[in-house]
Image 1 (cartoon, rainbow, N blue to C red):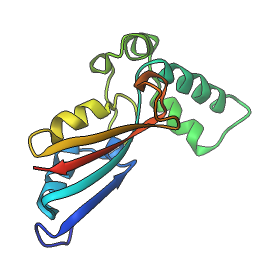
Image 2 (cartoon, helix red, strand yellow; image 1 turned 30 degrees about the vertical axis):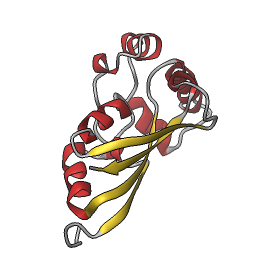
Image 3 (tube, rainbow, N blue to C red; image 1 turned 135 degrees about the horizontal axis):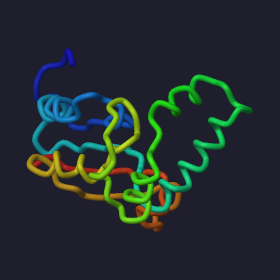
Image 4 (cartoon, rainbow, N blue to C red; image 1 turned 30 degrees about the horizontal axis):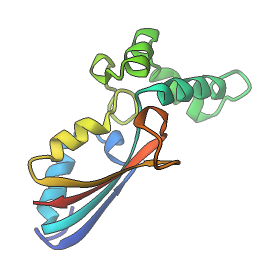
Length: 148
């Protein structure tokens, strides 16, 4: 990014990291531009647990012959296999899912937290649309972190 180092006290990253080819590089850039004690707010999808099964049913309905838009074509190239749906949907094992860069498939926000853990402290993890639902029933999460 065309910014000087260590200039932002607040960094927002909404629905982005699951779509980048090199998440580590993006996090390095976030680290570079943020000041000490900066706040980082990330929103990310949850692609494991029961919610993944619901999302896959919905995606299948959207890709039906009734709908022939670009979303439908993109989805057909990034489908989860039955084994992957069972692994991530029932057991929460996203490491058994083939990660497709630039898509949600195989993305796990918990891996993002692991990448951030050396420089950032998690302050809050809020699930949405209903904050008190567990990950397995939530569409996505809002992560609020403070730089160490």
